[in-house]
Image (cartoon, rainbow, N blue to C red; front, side, top):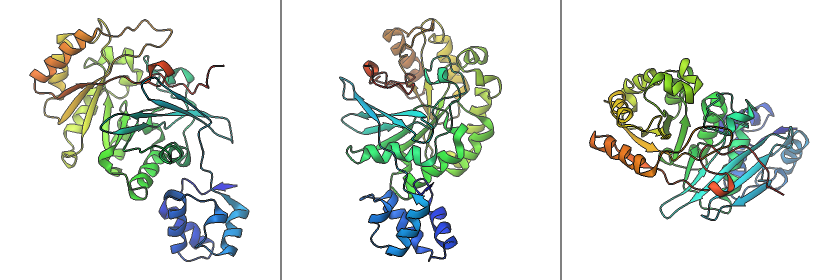
Amino acid sequence: MTELYGLTPGQLSELSVSLGWPKFTGAQLTQWLYRPPFAEIEDMNNISKARRELLASSFTVGRLAPKESRTSRDGTKKYLFESPQDGAVFEAVSIPDQQRHTLCVSSQSGCKRGCSFCMTARLGAGRNLSVGEILSQYQSIAEHEQISNIVFMGMGEPLDNLDNTLAALEILTKVCGLSTRRITVSTIGILAKLEEFLEASPVRLALSLHSPFAKERESFLPTETLNPAREIVSMLRNRREDKRRRITIEYIPFAGLNDSPRHAHELMRILKGLMVRVNLIPWNTIPGTSLQSSDPRRVEAFRAELERGGVPTTIRVSRGQDIEAACGMLAGETNPA
């Protein structure tokens, strides 16, 4: 049966018209699907019984609930979702703190990009999540947690699932009522798709950079060969229409590799003229790699060097390491026995 959950307001209106119903029935479906109280088809009581029966004969809502959850000692929660169709698994992470409550969502069940510091990359390509699967992560958790911010920083590369990411963003902002300033999409930078994304959505952008030097960045992110960071930064700099969009540069300092003053100075040089802030992300160790986390004092020195150069810089507080929920650790794993 076809799932209604994940269809945009425009698609629901088109569906209504195709069934010979008034266009406003699509608006009614939109409210029932994406605004509380969420309902199954039989409970949509402002739609006639005959129409509900016709819908139920060919359609299902299709909203997912988490299969499992784990709670960290720091209050972070990791949720595991599983597709009933093919068994694909993916994770979302809820991160509460005093000022905001952030939900980190996935866009794929794996990732083909092969970043050396990421557990998701070891799963291989996986598949794109549907619009409904992306939205289910937010709405099933928001029913019992007060989510204020969403970051697309979970499993997968959002720009490799661009159509579904954009449709989910449309529903989150135009129907669910989330501000575009409270949603951030993180990407390693796929040049062929980045400009399309920027044209289509005003949400905030985070660029996964990790080194200002091409060969070194390529050792962390193989995509550098086809999507050079300098070309990405140049494109962002030349987009006058994006002057008000907040752009974050994500940077993991690795011990003895990319955490030197030379790296800080080159990073300042390539970011010159671009309104950004840098977020330094502590390395969360994963097995099977020689990468090591930079010493906190060295990370602080790196931050101070960037600040002296006029680049606003913060150090991320890592959360959920004890449940494999921190940055780079998501791999769609079930609870240990």
